[in-house]
Image 1: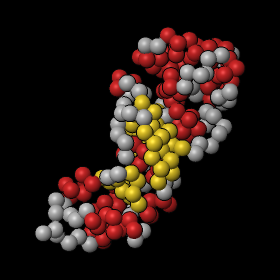
Image 2 (image 1 turned 30 degrees about the vertical axis):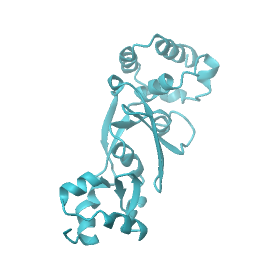
Image 3 (image 1 turned 90 degrees about the vertical axis):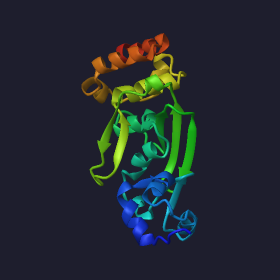
Length: 211
């Protein structure tokens, strides 16, 4: 017989995690009645992020929550590409989707916190990111690419950027690239991709577009 769990007990146990999985719930209480999850979602007490992952509605007030959730609902992954470039102010556009890189297959999820897209790379390319702690909620962690890796991920996964004109369409912030972009780190990263075409495009961008 399942042990009755009150919503308050459940909330107090998992609120600090931000989002959580059914596996974590099972470890917390092996007798937990999973029918509670569907009922609490229907009652607006829980938000389903994807199959097996949930969050509480009050997390919608935390600006960092979607970025933290991105790395938790589809691990291993880290925020990169357009989302990371926008975060650093390297491109002018605001980004609707939260874009991540993963060692798993390409995926897409949509929920009340936003749109989450994941682009697949080989496991050996899962590097060049850091784990940051949210300044708003110290219990939330965010896996975020360094600027140099975010740009390389973009050029690697979107090979349509070939010429100087193509690269100019990215509208990269010249001041950032000249003052904050770590070229030595970029050069070290690009060799790990083992891609001559990527190396060529990155060289074209740094030596041509930003000269």
